[in-house]
Image (cartoon, rainbow, N blue to C red; front, side, top):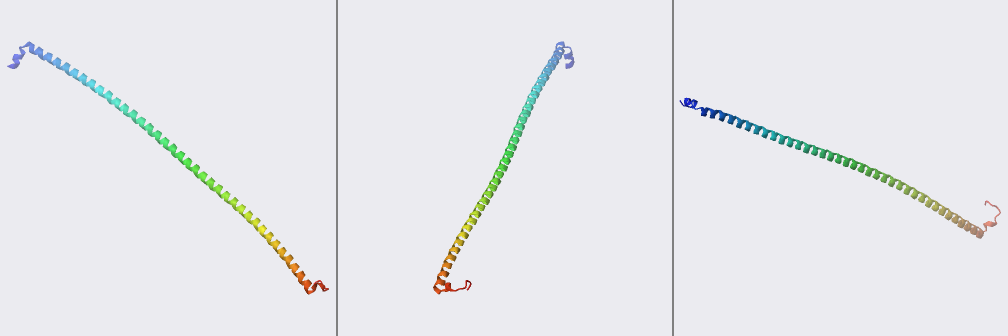
Length: 153
């Protein structure tokens, strides 16, 4: 009965069609707004992803630079350490050479001192021989041995 009543009312059907159209337009408008919102969110997400990628690339470059810098420092440190060792060994070689020269000088001085001591001993031996000869001569004179005829007696 109610359906029959509504069918006889042309405005009601017209109102229903109009309401349907309005509902469709509203739905289409909501769908478009939703699509725009999704598009905006996608753009924002794409920007976030791009920013994140840019930041990650920047951090990777910084990390690579730090690694390169550390490697250079280590290489430089190793180079400086090696140079230090080389200097140390050069210094040791210099010290060894210096000691060997000092030893050679000391040996030469000792040899000269030994030569002076030998000369002094020879001089003293010669003086002793002179004194001994004079003493023998005086003894021979006092004992009269110089008057003997034989030279080898």
